Image 1 (cartoon, rainbow over the protein chains, first blue to last red):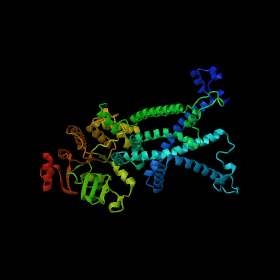
Image 2: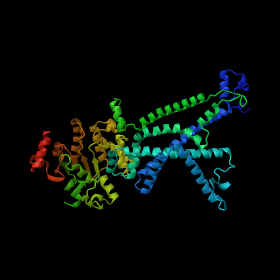
Image 3: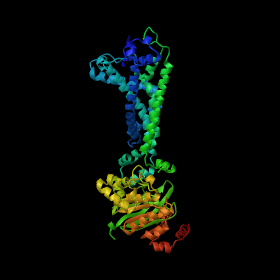
Image 4: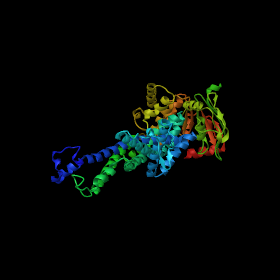
Length: 302
Length: 258
């Protein structure tokens, strides 16, 4: 049986039916199927690790665009922020991934299969030549996985980038006018003022908003499921459901509550750790800046 | 007097914010090595005049000549702007401003504050700038605070640091915008001492101040502004000792009584 294969070998696991509780559990939790759950934890962490900096970049770009004096760029920045913030995440996820996927295939279709005579839209069906498929149907599983993972990162980054753009845009405007005027008075150009004064000083205003976003991003990772990636929540439900002896060596009743409880603990612990790290980051980034300086002086810590 | 002896020459300057006329035709000159003080009650336009000098504000009418070079304008009235950005930057780097609220960049240490513009704006080599910056910090007496952040300094120390920052630009003139108004009387003195020593060195300075004692002590020329116009001006002994206009007499009576 499939479950007899495992990624961690305990010698006593060969006869699961005869085991005591603790041993049974250690065998049960090390089946290949459970390794999928652990892998999905890794996938979630990887998603976060890539999405956070990428959406910060998108956000920075969006905020810069929204500040631009060139109206095309300015309009683009504001439109990006407005649209993505206004549309529900789930709707955007569903729409954007399909739209992007089809746009890519449409482009590839026109470049790779110029002789194809059939219409792409056949009724409600979207049909492109086999060479234009993304990824190719013959491609191996990991290519399919990586493709959908990359789409997921892009989608998450666009959504969270828009929120980050709004936070950063506000933070840039929150830098005191006197600081900027002083830069003007000392002959700095707009660009110098932006990079040397506004950007270093905006973090103190941006960080509360950004850490909030980070928390929301962590909590949004189960949306991966919508993009066809089997995430932690998917596996918790899958593995927790009751199993009869017919299909597994580890029959059990409905354990979903426990699986979800474990998820709860995982997410809570993760957000708590994030909070601690972000607090430290805040203290470091804002060291010496007027508002924190004032606070620490009031507290008599200087 | 040749043209180049005049560091700043302002003529018939008008500035309004919407309906509010702040400056209604002011003419002012500062020669090399001269200390000119601008006094007057709040709202008289003295700070605005100073801010027009380094183009932080744009006057709707009138001319500003910096070392014989007139500022080029484009547009008229509300839409009037300096025409040449590089000229604006050149003038600003030569007229260093000291603000009422010090305005040290809060994310930089004192030394970084002093080094910032000479290095990033003037492009002077970092090592040279550092040497100069340390020398100016010593001059204003806060060498030991070089690596502190502004928030950890007293107001007087911050203002002295701001003066060091202005000096490190090696400007043609220093512009002081009420440099002691935000300070306790006790801390005021340490800043006043620095300004006095700069005046003795023969630096060109334009000082907007509420401190009549300071204006009397350091100035070569005192200008009394009232409601956007120059009411009276002259040598400090004349302006303070023998005020002619009624308005100035009232003003001096009220400020010296306070």
